[in-house]
Image (cartoon, rainbow, N blue to C red):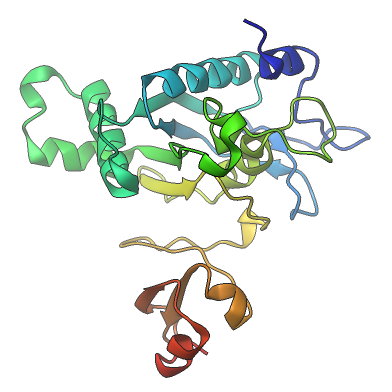
Length: 253
């Protein structure tokens, strides 16, 4: 079967680095570029890059795409790439899918007789650096890309033929700051949006949950999730698609 994504990738070694001599790179790091960064990014190591899928068929396509990018060397220093599909005939949702991803990691890391040990679960997840990209949507409004998923939707305006939503967003995510030596964390993102930001400006908390947000006009925020933050940046409440009036009465403005 003709696969335009595979054909495109074979003709291009995305991502192309800026013209001129390559910048010095520390051992274990690889230079990348992203739309919001003013200089090439250095990608720290990740233990796992996991992409979720809606079913086994979509997962098979995603596995082909990730394998191709691994072969071309465009995923930086990623230890393992996995695709985790929702359980058969079940839609797990983002939360359920995240749990499925963690279980796949634990199955990979722990012997069978230790998989019921909750302390062992904690030890693994605290020392592994895991990136989860949720990409298991149905793409109902773009039915032609149902099998591809919105994550691998081809985008215009790129520098090469190998240019999808995944390829535009993944350099910024993989360049997020690493935790302290010996520690791990899990970063979760949505595969159907393109966020432009400089990952070097992101500050991830040592403990708890850190949410990445931006300032936006109230009418625009009404179509998205909204944080109400305290003066020190601590999230006090989270609202899902609040109207402008609800934002005002809730202290979000």
